[in-house]
Structures are given as structure tokens and as C-alpha cells.
Image 1: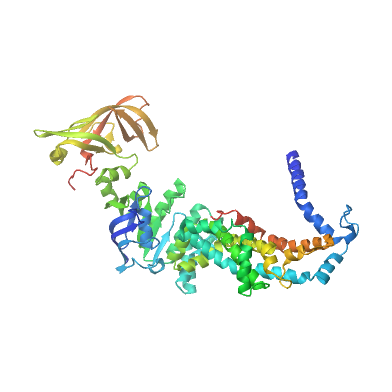
Image 2 (image 1 turned 90 degrees about the horizontal axis):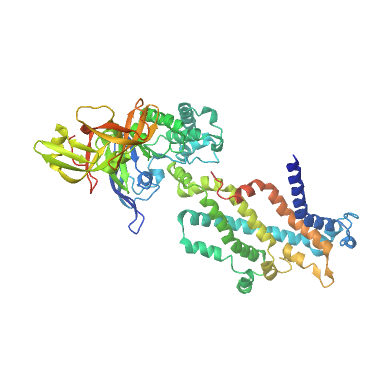
Length: 366
Length: 266
């Protein structure tokens, strides 16, 4: 068992300056948990607190049922993969991998066996006698992973391990890591600011802001039901379109007035949001929920194309409409010119509604 | 091609300007005393000046004194400077005040400390002893070397220690097994600088030393006698004095270059 339990943990730097504040999170045995958030949100600090590299000023951390809050890093049986890889520059790849086992008095033949196995899995066999300086970024990344694997720790902690790689390699390593996690099956905490990594790798994701947790859940669940505007916007690129809105209940109907996108809500949404009728709302719609063809329940609106990004598999267009800027993700064959006035359709069946003041979602059914 | 030749000519010229005084000292040490001031390059070659230096002036003893004092002071200072520099770099020990105090101590003219030091050491019976000189040199070098090493430790990524500590090392183990080996170029460079500073030090060696404990700079100064400067002996002494520095520089050239380019650790 190697579940991780964070109970109201805080990192207080003094003078009311918190790196992490009252964070509670349970990470299950074998789970791949992604901590996601912008720079300075406390995700790396949380990871370092789990590792014991950062002091936990309040709260309790337990790993595999054992309170480790005050234990030194070496007694927590965790392995960390750092963004900088932190390979020991004066040691060869083999010695880098051996170091942790040597520190733990693993028998020499067992050390050799594990190094050979990890090197085979990670394709590092030709480089075992090289120093880190003689390796490429991708190879260093693998060595950092290998060094963690051979230790056979209870928990893997990864602090943005892919962010120093180029885009192609990052994509490959993402898949490699997921495969590796499936094979090793160890509890993993993965820190990233990249929503694509979070969506594709995590069993669950934990979105953080200002040292606190905003939302925890399975990637698609969080994507489909963001708890507030921050999560809604952070978990996608382009970010969710948000427009100041007002709802008016009119008999059976509920009318939406969100600048360019105005009209009656579909039946289900009308029932759902009737009680929220009034001003002070934010209407949210993801870029892919703006379509080029009419569908039942979709609300037509017109706008001028200001940017067109042809990405290949799809196009991103930015539309100016009634003083609002909206992003849409459309079919690759839909290629308007910049300056064209076009008609698009907002799929209100996938709309989100937030309180404009707090940013919190207006409750909708599960 | 033309540019390369030009730059080589420039370099040769620069090297000649830098090396000429040293070569001329070497030349003066190798010619008979009466030719010292002649402009002939090598009228005749003799080792008499060196022989006289050792036979008449007891230079061997001075040389050993310098070697012992400079080496011992470095040996005493380096571990302290390394640990202090590390504490400053990693834990901000003592805050900015401690850092400033370290640097400020180097701003004090040594002569201001000479008299109090002499009186203190006389009370402890440390004048005219190599132990006394070693202590003074260690004390003088400690802040300077701490400062240099602090910069070097700051350039070593903290994650390296984090990795070592999660790998099973204690904080001390991470320092000993990871930080120190990675910092070797800086430590070697600092050690050589410390050695050179002690080797060249004159003021305290003069004040605290006696005839038995005179170091090379004091011995060389004593060659300015009432009968004038014994230039051929001085030249021989200076040639010998720069010898260990050149040997040290040769052996640790690699470290010196790496070490002085702080922040080069990747």
C-alpha cells in the first residue's frame, strides 16, 4: 500500500506568505495524480513537501499509512524526478542509478540487476558509462527516470519532468511515462503547468491556484464540469469563452442575453438554470462548442473573423462580435478569410454558467 | 589568414610584454653578480647566486617556512571556508549582515590589525612561531575564501542535493558525496588563491616572525642591505619564489579556469 494522504497541509514562509495553504488531498494506491496550475500556484511546493524537501509548517502528510510529516526525505521512500533532472554530473549514468541503492545498502548483484533492467526498459544500455554532460536532453530525462525506478520507491514524484524537452520528444515521453506507470503501477504525483499533459496522463488531476486546491477529479469530468472560471479557463487552450450574461425567466422559457449570443435556452438548460435568472452571470462556452453548422438547440450569431490559425487537423478562429472576442475550434475545411463576416452556432446544450462576482459555477446536474 | 597572422603577432607581443620582466629576473639570477645590470642577454651562466642564497642566507629554511605556513593555512582554512560558504549559500545563515561582515573584513587595511595581533600573539607566545603565522593566514584567508566558495556553491543547483537526499543521503552526505565533488574546481581554485595569498604575505610575516620563522618575502626584503640591494640574490630568490606558484598553476590550470568561471556548473 502506498497511498498518500495530505491533511490540511500548509507551507508558511512567514509574514502571512503561504506557498501552500490548507491543502487536503488523498491519492490512492497506484494512482497517477497530476498537480496542475500556473507558476507560483504551489504545485511544486506541495510535491516538495511530500518529498520532505520543503518543510510542512502545518498539517499532516502520510504515505502508506505512515505519518511522514517530520521525517527526513531519505526516510520517506519516495523518488523524485526533477525538472532539471538533477543528475549527478561527476558520476556516470550507471553510478547515477546506483547511488540511491548504495545509500540503502541494496546488495551489489541486486543493484546490477535493477540497473540492467531499467537500462533495457529505457533504452539506456549504450550510455551506461557516459557522464550526463555527454547525453542529450531526452537521454538525461531517461536517466533521471531510471534513477527513480531502480530505487523501487513507494511513490514517484515528478516535478515538470517534460518541460525541458522539445515538443516532439515531450509527446513521446508522455506516452512512455504512462506506459511505464502502467507497468510499474506505483503511486505517482506529477506536477505540470501543461493542461495537455494533465488531461492525457492523469487518472485524476488536481488544479491549484494561490496555494490552494481549486478542483480535483478525473480529467474529462473536470473538463466537462469545471467548478469555477479559473478551472474552466486553465484547462483548455484556447481558454473557455466567457461573456457577461443575464438570464430572464419568461413563462416556460428562459432567455439568455450574453452579448452576441442571445436567445432562448434549450429545454433542459432552461429547467436547470431557471432559478439563477437575473444579472451578474458569466456565460461560458468552449471553443469546440461553437459550430459552423446549425444543430438543434444551437444559437446562431454573427461575427467578424479577426484571426485564423490553420493548425492542420483543425482551425482556430477568433471572432469579434458585439464587442466580444470569441474563440472557436472548427473543421479544417472551414477556412474563412480574416475580415469576413460569418455566421456561427453556439451549442447551448454544452453551455456553462458562472456567478460573475465569485467565478463559481452555477450548479448543474451531474 | 592575414587576420590570423595579425592576431598571432598581437598575442606574441602581449605575451612578451607580460613575460619579459619575469624572464629578465630569471636571466639576472643566472648571470654573475657583476653582469646583473648589463644589457647583454646571457654573458655567462652560473648558479652561484642560488648557491650563495642557500649557503649564506639560509634561504632553504625560509623556503620551507613559506611552504609549511602557506600549505597549513590552506589546509586549515579550506574545510572551514567550504562549510561556511555552503551555509551562507544554502541556508542564508546570518542573513545579509553576515555576508556583509565577511566582505567588510577584507576592506580593513591589514596594517590596522598588525599591532593588536602582535600584542595578542605575544601574550600567547605565538610570535616567532610558524603556528602563529599559520593561524594569522588562516584567519586572513577565511573570509575571502568563504566569499569565493559561497558564489560557487550558489551556482550548484539545489535540486542536486534534493535528489541525493531523497536517494537516501543525509544533508551532510549530500554535501560530502555530491556538492563537494561537483564543487571541486571551485575548491581547488580557492585553495590555490589561498596558497598564493599566504605565500606572498609580507606584513604579518615581518611583524610576527623572527629569524627562524622568516618566510620567503621577508628573506627577500632582507636582501636590501646597507650595502645596497643584492640584486642577483634577489633575482634568484624571486625565481625560486614563483616556482611553486607556476607548478601549482600548471597542475590545476583546468580547475582554475573552470573554478574562476563561476556558475559554470550545469
